[in-house]
Length: 345
Picture (cartoon, helix red, strand yellow):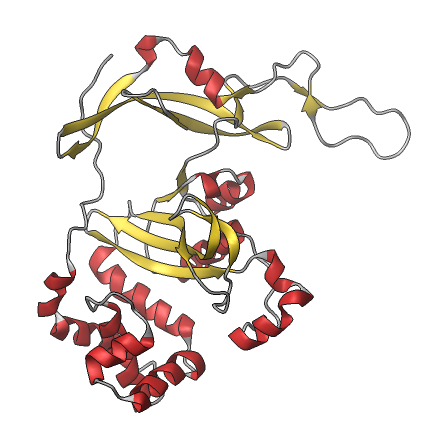
């Protein structure tokens, strides 16, 4: 059956830098919420200037450029802000927790959505912490860049950034990078963590805080391809909406499993295996190609400048694969473009 029901999406963020000229007072009020968490008066002042600087309509958001705009050609001010960012000591987690408390008052909703995503920042030099030749999503290719993992919150009341982690490539933990780690102030006890592990660290901390009620976690293929992360999300009592690779395999029907016979030697088998007659799991792209036309439904994704943007969707209950055995039962949502038949899974 063909349907033309719109799918609700987050509102478009259409603010421009000039729109921010009138909210300096609101920015000061926002910074004041965190002011007590900075130990010294100078830290409180520079934190306010730094926030203001990040919102300036200037080509480069370097410290020199921000200070020049806010204080003029004052070299002492440049050094003071550099010292604030590089050597200033404050409790970062306390600030993040205060942010969650503030956002909960404005955005909290039992059906809230946590959005886990990565973002990459092209870099020309090699001095920035974590910079390396790696895949850069912003450029769509391998390039010199920094990479981060971010956690955001969205509800019917609005949306906001909750947390972030810098991704350090494995090469940064080798002896070749020892001097650079020291120069960048990387803690001695820090060890390599994948982007999925960084994402889980943020999700777990938020869940343990109990600050932001939510129902869903949404993520792209970079995280959705990790079954262990998806199971960790489910262990928090949350539902996930995750993009996965086309070659992900699932069962449409539960396959037969069996406990192997005991040979009489060693411990008795405890882990089931697929029965010899069990069907193999199918790739998602093969499932999509075999679906009859009546199982696809047409929906409006969003209203575009040239009219509604449409796509076809199919919804199936399937069994995920976990360690070559049937895992949790999940919804498989397939999306197919009307213009070029591009498949999203």
